[in-house]
Amino acid sequence: MDLNQLRSFVAVAKVGHLTRAAESLHLSQPALSGQIKALEEDFAVTLFERSSAGMALTPSGGRLLTLAERVIEAVQDLKHAAQRLQGEPTGTIKLGTVLDPAFLRVGELLARTFDRHPQLELELHHAVSNDALARVRSGVLDASFYFGDRPDDLHSIPLRKVLYRVAMPEAWADELSDAPWEAIAARPWVLAPEPSSHGRLVMDLFRARSALPARTIEADNESVIANLVESDVGISLVRDEIAQESTSAGRSAIWPGATVSTDLWLVHSADRVDDPLLAALVEVLLEIWQGALEPEVAGV
Image (cartoon, rainbow, N blue to C red):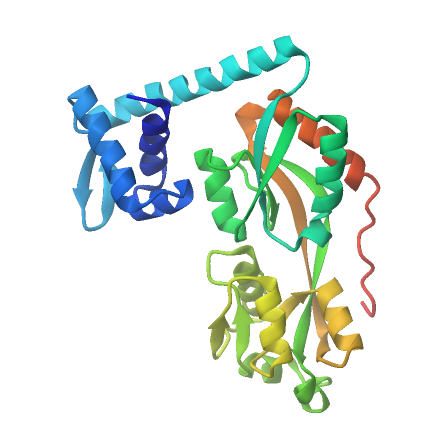
């Protein structure tokens, strides 16, 4: 038995599915399956019931899950205690990013962190919003940027408001700029796949008007979404900064009938509030974001 096997056991137990757990851990499915099998052989206990629907904990697995989480937490506590004794946070933080690095001020964060805490390294991992949350919950990521509703089960630090505009192809502007919502809703819409935050924002926009999009096209990041709008594929919610720049360049147009607002957070596990590595990261992050102005909502 080793710590990686315990982490794999916890990850599979949390999501109830071998493939999704393997993705969150960045392991191949056979490798993860081998770790679970080795742990079951070491314990001489069946941890999961396998079925076509996924992996369900056995009663024995359920009892051992709590102990496994305690072991992982105890190892983290041991590392934190050693770091506090050294007086300087030392180690690597795996940080999730969900939007473009410039918007998240990642460059400034890396530079200031290295200057302030030379023994602290930041390892960046891009992910869609809900995948980032799953990786934080499973411990694959130490922390992540996230936009959307505040997650109840994670420690969440608010950073700023994020505005989205209804952006359309420039070629459709003459016909749709002053059109009612029904005409906008009838066109194809580009959105990130559920359960992403972008996908939820689009669907909430429709549900508020008692409607569903007639046709959707999925794209998994905001640069692709903006490009599809500019390429006359469909309409979408596009972050204000991107929409304004695209409109100024004549590549797209903004429908003025709706503006959507959400929140940007840094999230991490609630039981790691006193983690010296995360405390150092948050200290630098808040200095960078302190006094960040909410973007102005023109025309609203």
